[in-house]
Image (cartoon, rainbow, N blue to C red; front, side, top):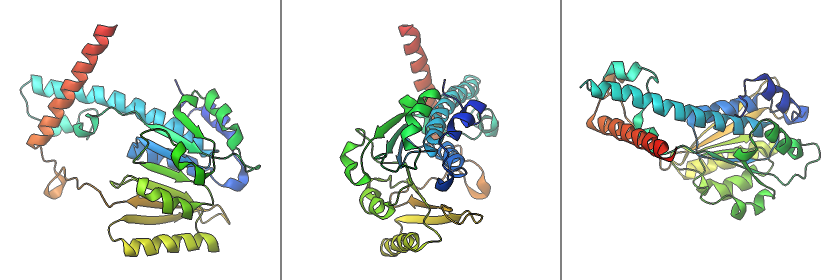
Length: 284
């Protein structure tokens, strides 16, 4: 089983990829937490290094969490339905609390593709595979050894829409111009490193702001500054919203609406879990 990002083995291994001038010692855990929060299916990294194991480990952990969560969700749903009870707050707050069945109706098999031409001598990109193998994460990452500008047709099959992209490269503007149409319009995230406190980065952010003005409803933008650093000191997060689905699970006051659709989703999820277990038993 791959090591957790919280384990001593993980911290020791990734420390060998740390390059002081890259400034990603705080960003790595941030990206891992975003993966846990968003549970993306297709993740793209541009510029391998210290952050790669964090992304890979977070995706592995998210997949395990989803599998465990699905079984626990089915168990509590079965308990309610077998007792002739409708879904209610006691169902909602039982383990796993607050989970929506609709997001468990499709298998969760996340993938990570990492683009890097391995040309930067001071980068730790060339040592990433060794660390991934040591941590049991090498099968989690498809490495695309190419320049960003030559990588579009080298991505894995069926790798769009991209749900989450981490761009730690100078070609942020080129990425935005050419990859933005590939980002999931229903809330797909692009996180770009170091676009604050120097002229070229400011120019990229102005370019994106102008695009935002010309395309209302297309994206949301926020930049976060690591104020203690002189360089490599920010992340700019773009969220694509042109196709964002409006979700409303609750009514006034935030109380959950135990609708017919919610009941149908819960019953369908329960059936899928039962069918999956039966298939596993037959193949055993």
